[in-house]
Image 1 (cartoon, rainbow, N blue to C red):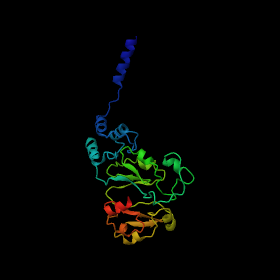
Image 2 (cartoon, one colour):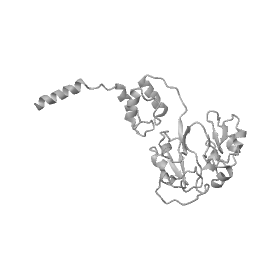
Image 3 (cartoon, helix red, strand yellow):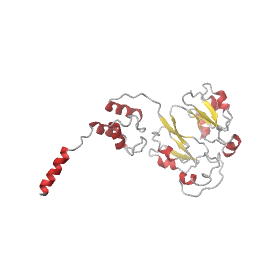
Length: 260
């Protein structure tokens, strides 16, 4: 009786088995296997299933970049248009000796824990990097290091998975175009005098950068300068004019050294 029952189960399994899309295995085989979640799915296998089913775009994996996107497009028989790659950037330079501390912190070495306190951490600047390394631990690609109390991203190692962005309780890490070298590395919206008191490299909303920007890529709103990357040509005129050096041009070794 058991033999007959087992045979019936085997027959039913073959009869009603759902055929697996051969594209699924092709897609899954070339994914990086990082399981970082940057695609929005819990793992590479889930992303592969979504791509094979047409529910996810072929450029959804930030780790594989353009080469993987083209390979996935070939498997799926679709065309993709090239886009500027993004990388994570920490919009704070408030390192030790530059940013004012308002209190000491002796709790868990976790930024979320520090930010949950009434004072939002030890730094006087409300938008200051807490420097406890939560984003560093969230990065699976060793692209983030802590230097003098501030997180620094290695843009060549960054895969744009976005895990550091999710981990930062102060929202200081933003995905920005890799090809754009000029950035306002400050998110403090306090009035100029207060911001400068809290951090020597804070934006003071003086608008000097706005006046010298040829393409008009910079605006000041809510006491903070911001760059429209679609308009910025990377000329660096704003960097030279900024009195607090909150504007940085990464390709300029002199300014890079001053900012480090």
